Length: 257
Image (cartoon, rainbow, N blue to C red; front, side):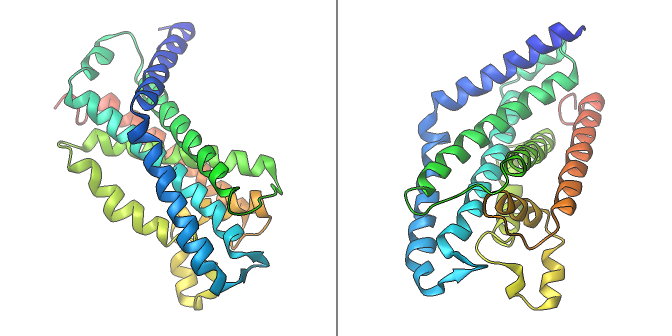
């Protein structure tokens, strides 16, 4: 299959994904916007008044990048895992498998759809944040590259989850028992410098910590970790998860069983 046809295939999948997101906007866009608004009101406005400043910034300012990144991560992941598992469950994944689409095109198309939803919701949450605090972007290129890489990582993770899922309950296990705890412990609401040295070391095993802090550095210019380490981890996860996704598609795991 030549490059032009692959591009058409990818565009078709992305278009399908975006139509799906916008058609059920009351389920895909409104809930995260409401949830993040509540976070800003409760954690930023009410609790933040008692906390004061953190790393030289108003507490509302400090948590805003983390909440934006949280919305990007959860929506990128959720879009791909639900969409691809839905294709398996409805058995219209077979139409893609028998078509001349390459497995890479199927993966890229679904991941691009997840990235677009993550960025759409992230942009909406950013607008909401501006009603509560002021954000001045310190490093625009770092901010954009980190949010793109992070959404790609979790879109790929959602794809792998969907490949192995056999029933609808399986697509909620990872978000509930893995993704949510890692997100809350990923430095969204606090600086790890507040933790004892042992727990700082434990926290550094959490990949979301690097994504949140790198994104915070892009906006506020402060971070608890090395930005180069963050990029190394992000790029490493993109390569690893894409390779794993491609291998699973080539082997037909969860699809041709």
